Image 1 (cartoon, rainbow, N blue to C red):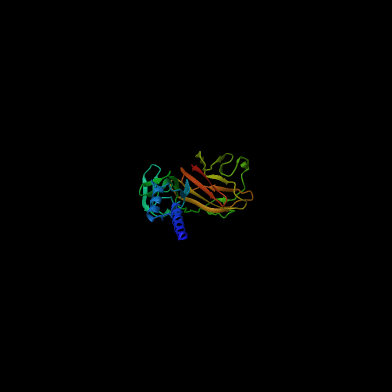
Image 2 (cartoon, rainbow, N blue to C red; image 1 turned 90 degrees about the vertical axis):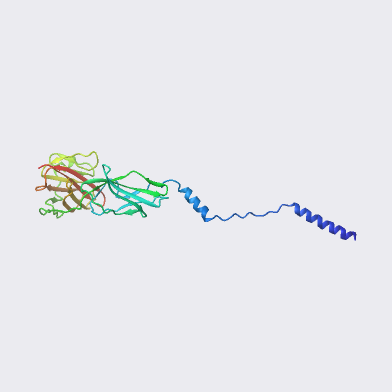
Length: 276
């Protein structure tokens, strides 16, 4: 009987000892609710969106198309975008709100030969955020008015393309556009500071820095009226140079003309005032 008593007491004691040992229970995290995820997203987007990065047209671009598509990169936290075009004096030309994509092709009438600013703002319920505007120039598409046939590149504007370089070639330095009225050479590149050269009827136009034999498109526009007076293409010579003898007979005098050379390696331009 004593043995049974001791066994009973021993079992009771063991149970009491086990009761004193804390249980090791692994904590199971509560699932994150959809509401909590939404709250975190809203907290990250508190305030106006980061200004979108403008993509095209590039800064200070000259546009020779009637239809212009403007593009930008998406901005985090923006749900819609606001697009504007305005003149350099700040007059609003076009304003679009509620754009959900990252491009627009506005249907507006622009004045040839004029410059405009465009900009995009990213918007949400807190407001809109935008960076500095970007400048572009609007030029009418070229409508050549041939006045004869040229040599070399088969020109249609009354000039001779790829003529022999004038003897003053030593005065030319680097990739640029030059006007040669012999013996005077004018640096006529469009890089500021701009110089407004006044030239006579017949001039040589030089474009340097292209690849040997590179095909280069070139065009001339009256910046005062937006009218195109010449559009053609020519291959650079073995030194990557282009020489054009330009006869402006019959062209309106007192106008400012803008010449663009556009090749695969570079685009350069020149300008002058024609005063016959």
